[in-house]
Image (cartoon, rainbow, N blue to C red; front, side, top):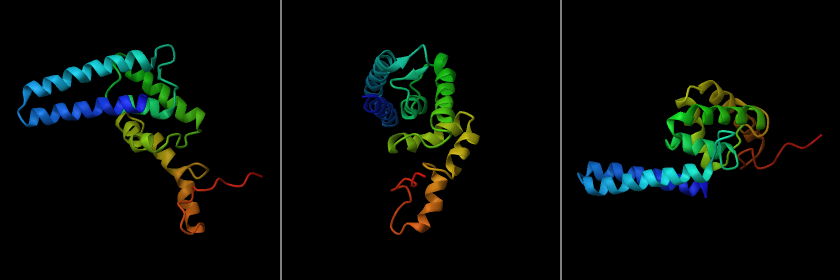
Length: 153
């Protein structure tokens, strides 16, 4: 629900921008009104004030509202801090998203002053890091290197 709602919000913003480009102020206003309504509903439904996280606290649930501009200014830093803490502690500075979150992960971190963390994630050489995938790829014919986990010892 959070992912679908985030993307719906983002698409409404894009539609409002297109309407402005096409000189259709009435339609743009309608899209902007709906965007505002969705943002308000989203905030009430998914934001956890006591922990400054969205929904279940996954990396993706923090990344999407931050990147799409859904987080109210008063809470933006706290949500960002929670996301960074999640990345550093829960996944040991490894990728902790699926495909949906991964496409916005590096941009979100870099745009918010955490390029160092983005770099650390990108260069992790232990599973499930991208560096691990790169190092394993030559050993796995036809595989991206992440298809199998390392054998437990």
